[in-house]
Structures are given as structure tokens and as C-alpha cells.
Length: 507
Figure 1: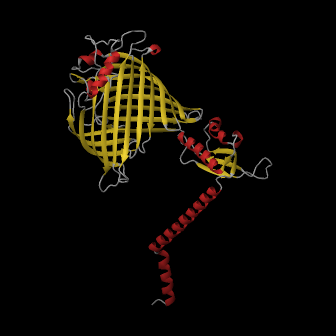
Figure 2: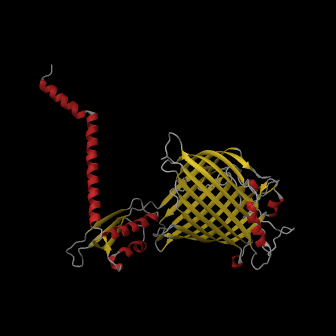
Figure 3: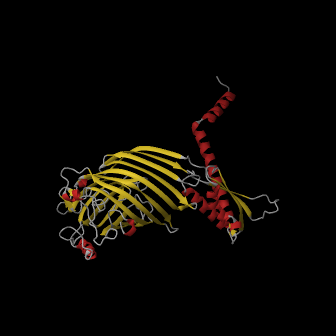
């Protein structure tokens, strides 16, 4: 029989190894640490609030661990913050704001690991040149690896492919990037590109890009294959208000080849080679909270292209412009959102070089409309002019749609999964007023364009309605929908039933 002393020791040993008691002690310790951290944070906030107007002098800024990045590149980012380079003194609040802005700029170069840490210190006051208001700023910026290689497969609307991407970062110590891409697929038979991207004057919002590419794409809806080879250069910049601009030049050799046996006369007339030399401009103002599945906000976007006019030369000449808008309106905090969007575009024929007669548009350049990412309920390029089995595209189009998205029951509004009910439609028209021989008359091309735009509203648009399931992944949006065409014109191709779509832009 154990003695009372032994029983007491045994009970104490049991208490020491009791898992429940250990968990409770661990939780209590974490709770005390969290409470202490909260109090420290509150004291820090109070200290900052009490001293926001105190004068501060930034005497030095040191960026640590940025071993592969050029000193001159970094100096353009941080030197403007030094008090010696400013006419007006800082307050503490202004110091924190300015340093935070510099750190955000470093983050947007994409060459440093996140988060970037910032430390403040007082310099040695025994140094004669130091001041009681002086502070030293230390920015710890760990560099990312200098390369990334990624391989994978993708599946989308009527297409699947395998790809490899390679990226070299911070190539010359100034946040330069060299990217290579290669893919093989069912519709895009092959695609290869090599792009060089660099910020200008150490500004992540002002960049220059040079790109070369080659691709071969099966255009099954128009009985041919399109081969592209060429390159472009582009300047991009973003204003403080969030307006993004892209201005560029492209030179592309195009070939309409591998025609099907039943290819239409329209496709056969455009078969062969052409060279497009064009200037482009894109403007984007995106205020949506989450572009793949917006809950609130709006988008405005325009894309314009001028080809073959004056010194641009090439084999084709036109002005092409598209505009897009979208708005998302939430119903309180329920997770239910109404999104509505409009798109439209025109292709205005121009005379090539010094010629006087505007050129007829080619199938390479005309608009296509229809499919799971544009007008649901229709086959890919199912709307607009057709010649026999081929969708030959149009010169003017307008499309719109509205979707009501709401959370999936028992899943919750916090997940990127939604049910949707939608209605969408559009019209795609070829330019009216051609001469009998198919050529355009320069004297009447403006009137022809006005008449074509006006005729968009003459009849009901081709439209469809349906419902489905939406999943918003960070890199793409996936939809599975059941669609029912409501209005459809002769030769247009509707799609009743289930369809699958993947993309980054949906009507």
C-alpha cells in the first residue's frame, strides 16, 4: 500500500503531464502575450498620435540586403526623402507617410520579397553634425530569386494547351525583367514570345517593354489558320489617380493559310500574306474591388489602333476603336451583387499611304462576337455576318449584359464561389454602303459608317439568358452556365445547354 506522501507525489506528477492542463497553460500564455502585444501597439499608436506634429529630420536612409540592385537605381527612390534634399521640414506623420510611399514603390518593382521591413533609429548625439530631430531609416529589402520557371496545362472555352514560362528578374540591377513563353495547344497550335521590360527612372509606374512573338492559331469558326510573326514596343504609365495608359507601336506579318475545303469565298479572298504597321493606345480606369468577381466599383476602358496611315505604311489601313464599361452594385452586406456591362467598337477604313480609295477591312482585323466570355448562349464567333459555314466578322458592334450574383447556400459569401443569373446580347454588323464591286467610295465612307452605327438599334439584339456557377481564381474566372438563346438571326449560331468558360474579362 502506498503512503499518503507517495499518493500526493503521484497526483502532482499526473498534474504535470495532464495534456488538457498543458493546453490550458499554453493558451493562457498566448493570451497574455497577445494582450501585452496589443497594449504595446496601443502605446505606440498613442505615442505617434501625441507626436505627429513634432519636427523630424531624415539624416540617412540605408537599404539592406539589396546586393544585386544598382545603387544609383535605389538612390532615385530614396534620395528625395532625405531632409537635405527638401526645402520644407518633416513632421513625424509626414515622415511615416513618405517612407511608407517609398517602401510601396520598392514592393511594386516585383524584385523584393514581401513584406519589406522598416526600422528607425536615432544617430549618435555625440557627433557634432547631428541634431536632436535627426533619425536614420533602415529598410530591409530581401531580394527575390533571380529566375522563375513554370510549366503547366490550361483548359478553357474550346481550347486546351501546355505551356512553359521562364522569367529572369533584376537582370541588370534596375528591376529589368526578361520573360520567355512557349505553348502548344488545340486551338492556338503554337505560341512563342520573348519580352524585355524595364522601369524608367526607377519609377514602377512608368515602364518600357519590347516584345517579339510568333504564333499559329486555328480559326475553326472561319475555316482557316492564322500565322503571326512580329514585335511591338510599348510605354506604360499609371497616374496617381489610378488611370493606366499604354502607348505602343507594332509591326506584324500575318498569314491566312491552311484553308478548309469548304472555306467561303470571303475567307478565300483574304487568304495570303499581309503586313500591319500600327500605333495603339489603351486607357484603363479600374475601380473595382476585385476584378475577377467585383462586389462594388466600376471599370472604364478604351483601346484604339491606327494602322497604315501616312508614314506607317504596311498593307492594311484603318482606325479601330473599342470601349468597355462595367459597374458592380452590392445589395448591402448580403454578398449579392448586380453587375452590368457595355461594349462597343468600330473599324473605320482608311486609304493606304497616298492612295485615295479606303481599303476594305480584312478578316484578320474585323470584330468577332459570341462565346462564353462575351455573349453567352452563342457559339464562339456565333454572332454577326456569316458566309456559308464561316463567321467572317463585322466592322461595328455593340454588346451588353447584366448578371445577378449571389452566394452559394451553406458555402458563404466569403468564398469566391457564386451562383449567377444573367441576360446578355449584342449585334455585329458589316459596313453598309459598299459599291457593287465590293470597293469603298471615299466620298461616302463617313455616311456609310453613320448608317451602320444607326442600324444597330433598328432591331432587337441577338440575346440569351441563363444561370450558372462562377468561381473566381486569382489568375482567371471560371464559369459553368446553362444558356437559352432568346433572339437569334439567320445563320447565327446559338448554343442551348451547358457551356464552360474561362478568362479574365467577362461581359
